[in-house]
Length: 91
Image (cartoon, rainbow, N blue to C red; front, side):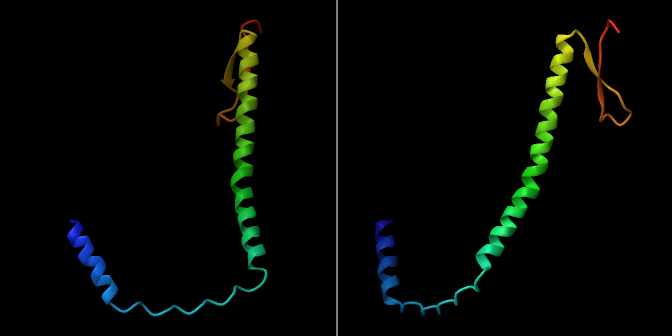
């Protein structure tokens, strides 16, 4: 195995080196700001809905805990299942 590796390494030095690639021109000024603006926009579009959904979840968990502590249970208050209410046995 090592003899094969040594042979291939030796053959690699016998071939001519690849041609040098030309240097690329510098990007136009302001490109960094445009890339940063797109990155910030995508971050906001991703993180804002996530944080709103998590805040809603935490509020619902806190209200459900209050309802359970008072001896009730959380029920759907609307047909689409988006609204909840606390049903207590004493009411």
